[in-house]
Amino acid sequence: MSAQKEVKELKRDAEKQGWTAVEKKNGWMMQSPDGVGQVMIHKTPSARSIRHYVADMRKYGYRP
Image 1 (cartoon, helix red, strand yellow):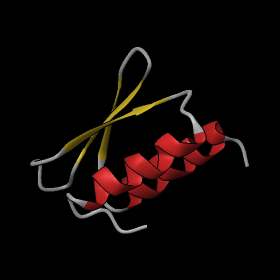
Image 2 (tube, rainbow, N blue to C red; image 1 turned 30 degrees about the vertical axis):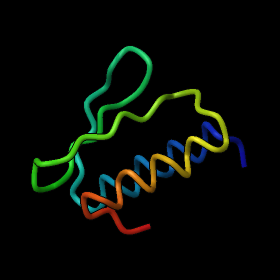
Image 3 (cartoon, rainbow, N blue to C red; image 1 turned 180 degrees about the vertical axis):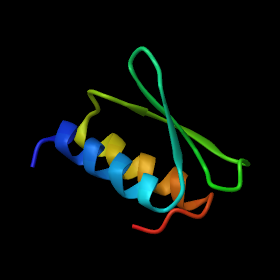
């Protein structure tokens, strides 16, 4: 699976868990359901950065 497809899947899954996505120039700013955390997800990431996005989001309650 390409990195861009993985990002779209991550975004879709996070939105199901209550996260809010605000589109920016190069990606999405993901706001946690409780409003405390924010994680920037780029539209064209490297394969490794997706793991970093998930790790950062888990700090604010995201469950993969």
